Length: 472
Image 1 (cartoon, rainbow, N blue to C red):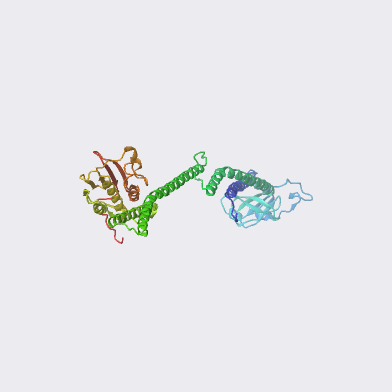
Image 2 (image 1 turned 90 degrees about the horizontal axis):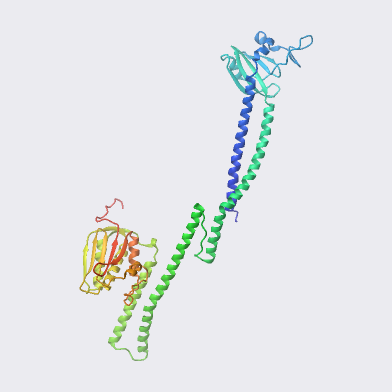
């Protein structure tokens, strides 16, 4: 895998790491909580003892001078010829000058904080971890019993340390088991969660291998994986439609090109045979033949240009600039009048400015006018062109279009049954639709009241020119 982990292994590792971290944090927190509770229990046991001064007072008469009371194996005050005394707890008196009177077990080392308590008010106390002179760790309670005197009582932390060590091993074992369980759970989760992704991957690989765009994957639920499956199915549907349109375009283009190419070849062969046979055509038939050849070449040039125009993607159009649409319509009308001088074109234009490709919009209007002129049966009736409030209308007085054919008028290479005997490739209205769509508008073709067809083009814009921003 070129040193890279699979998505499944990464997801497993991520889940295991997250669960292991959570378990480890909980174990550490548990250890600290138990430690704090054990220390509080020790402190409560120290607070629950009788006042230490009642135990040690008889052995420290007069204050600091009693600090040197001898201690035997059974406690202070015992020895030959003396009455046995009860065992004393780990306790000592601390005086403001630093002297101490020790009874019970090994003395506890004094800290500056302990000395500070001797100068405080009676009843004030503090807890800390300390060390005896023998190096044993103890929990120490220092309490001021009277001005200049504090009592220090302690308890060994050996049991607490042993308990915490045992707890640490237990928690470490639980953490280790938790990590193993987390890894197993992560593997199970990754397999379950990535199963739809695996199906999608197999489908994508199958499409890449076979180019079968009819492949679909089953979609279950409404989660992100299901949405990804829906998107994949929509993508393959769109690609299949695009490929079908491409095939249809190629087939239609081949069909449309075949007719002028066949006619060109026939006329050129006729011209060559007459010259090669030594029987050249008369001047008049030859002129008609050459004129026919020129017309066919022009038809082919127009068809090729239309195909190139339609083959450009949506992002390949010219940069949009501000266009005076009324000027573009007026230029298109002039071109239409030159092509059809015997057809009257009635024009009524009002200013309209928009952002778009002026050449494409002008060509779209020319195509609408060419259609209107082509289907104007009565040359006495004018083609009416109006531009008002951003809506351009082109009306002719021809036979109109059957209602069942209106939904197909903007399809490529589509021609009405009544127009198939007329020249043209069926691309003119498709070019109109693309140019208007690129400019953000819409175009509608409908039958006009009283006969003929009416084309409506609505383009977003304004009747006034946009203000010029300094620096642009």
